[in-house]
Length: 504
Length: 81
Image (cartoon, rainbow over the protein chains, first blue to last red):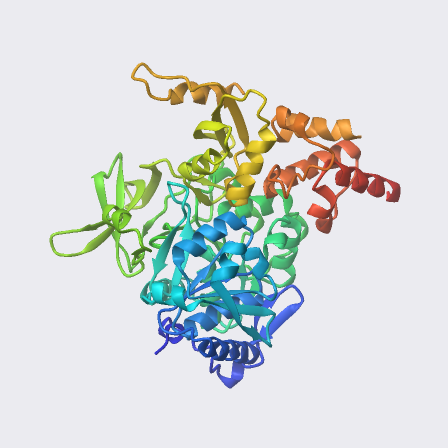
């Protein structure tokens, strides 16, 4: 059994009844289930000719498109490990991820190898064009293949922000994928008639729901690409016109729809499930959205990329106007076991165990030893770093982070990642990144930069970040200082810096 | 017109010091000054200030990525209305 069928997808031999049904749509392009099967088989053949096989790691560096989804499915069908990159990331960052993952192969949009940078052009050779699709397949030269001959059992490797400025890859096994897909099937009861949106980019775990759950049930999935997702009125129009019935995104995306989407002028008769995850949804906005989409059920899903969804909470139908605190993250999913390290009433660290938990970070032995904990009976627990408390009803409440990881617009950001990028600027001597939460729950990133050059332009600092970081990590404000304020013990006086934000 | 646009940016969206540094061809969206949310907020302020209405497909890089592109877009828009 290959990795595609082991996660419960039988799209390569769809039943006759769905062969002509539309599987996947992007803009004015679409594939039926029969066409999807033939595309995936065709690409799998091409991949096996270029020797992508069991345990081979394949980077997919393409804009969100039908071709990108077919590539992911074909890699899994060839028993490979797919590593979807953030295509819009600067090339320095993509280079870091390519070096770190040491892929056997790279799939790119045809003719785009120049975007990989000179370093990789020398290491990867074009081995195949795929005629049915506008893609090139590059394979590592022999010396690198030997160097990285070790196979990986993961279905997916997803990169996430790292403390030292180097992104780290979360390894997701086929079992972990299947666990999540099956849980979605049982909880939301998707049908052939459902229409899924795919709002999250393909390098985010949220996309796993949209693509795999939709295709497992022979439903239809609509890809919303990066450009469209920036335009709430177009997205709202798509949900209404295409009669989307199952939506999954961050609360930020939903709040953008609420504020800028013009929802009140449209009808959404088919929308039945609205799932959100990644950050707390402010109760006031959630109430407003529920008032517009009255017939849909709203679900708060919780779980970092490392565990995927492990708890859930169905938002009650009526939300009192007076409610200000966000809703609970709920109770553990059937596949997850929880343990709270610390006081469960005031807040302790959440530990998670179960089949949806990652196999570990790729090639980060030390970090893996820190985040995994084996108990006396040999059960392995993942330390989430999230602080949670238990309500009287047994629901968990998210209380914050143990470390300084930030969630901005649903994106996870390690401040150290931004600090490391700014330190590459020769005029920068020290950096401290702080976040500020406004009274309206808007998070902003403030980079305090120590420089000896008082004429250093902020536009240069912005350029440094632009060259090294994905756009969602861009600081909102830069503050130049000749030195950091210090506490009596000689540490950076973070309180004093925070005051500069408030009075900025 | 450029002054009005700069004023919106420095009063509501960006660090005034960075707005002063902007050239008319500095890329605002591609250059990391405006993210998708601040672009939409910016568009709302432009609608109010210049008494125009953006169509859904008009809130794009093609129209908003620099001070000169914005001016060009606003001029075309106001001529047509």
